[in-house]
Length: 461
Image 1: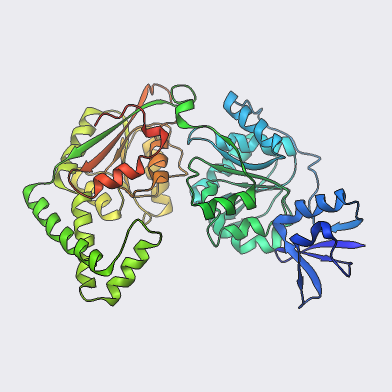
Image 2: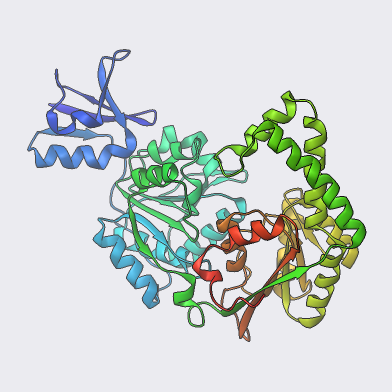
């Protein structure tokens, strides 16, 4: 009789001299152990194929059971869009990806999925902040201990939250213990390392959650393979003014000073001339890597890289942008404001200019928590950040965002908008300002990152 076992993050299929046709495509013969081997994530497909083919087997891979003593501490009251997402996920066989805007209650949807299945669940998150937020939500709704992997914790329970990094270190040992795999911010999952967290788990039920699913064709295929197809997609525009705060987006073009413009043009010409000589085309994939390699190989490469950094810094942090930040802060005095930059230097420059707290990846955990707590309480009305607040931080009090600089990523832009859209008492309308240095490369970058429906409403510029 065929026997299926979980073995260090893979499945072994033994007991048959030749592999049944029903699962032949899902297995490979491992000559080292003289057994057939399969990906753990194909566990459900293998089991269902054997059942349909009426082939007897023994399942020794599964190391979980239905939670008999599972109880709900606080009743989950879903909103209509959450009920819609839940029904579409169930209709997809409890396996698929749900796209909901930031602030639309993806975590509550996950609680609904756990309550529906009543089976052990592993939740993957990208940051320590999200790790603690998820555990707090689980403790709020369920009368069951919450396990934690990451941030110095190593506690595995029937419902466990883990950072992607910690899951990667442990999944070969615990990949058989969970029936439900939830991947928060699942656009991180297809990366070469993170995908192992999903491929080495047997969980037959899977829920991917994200507000920003703009992925390359390769990564989209990997995500669908590991978590299932997209089964629900609800946009910001569908929920704005109801579930989410209504909002307005304004792009403000500011001019460089004559001295800044002269310096910008000088370094821009050095950089673009090198691109032409080295035949670097930034419309191609991996162009940045090609540029760095060319800088290390060709004459003038060091100067080109230096000029690139300088012209970018001038466009990102010109004096006019600092002046406009002051205008906007005065306009919205008394509101909670987040100022976003693309790099730490710009963030610290703004912090020093206006004496504001700055959050970057260098900020220690205790200080970061204090800054966020004070911001929520109103003691700090303004926060400056580089990229650490792009995702995973719940600050519903924020009603104004100022994008001083950023990449051309649509995902980053939508995530920053999402930071100010959560409903909060007395918040009538959120406002997002995008500062762009006129007649610089920032204009093309701004156009590229605004290619999302959320930015096609009310765009005075």
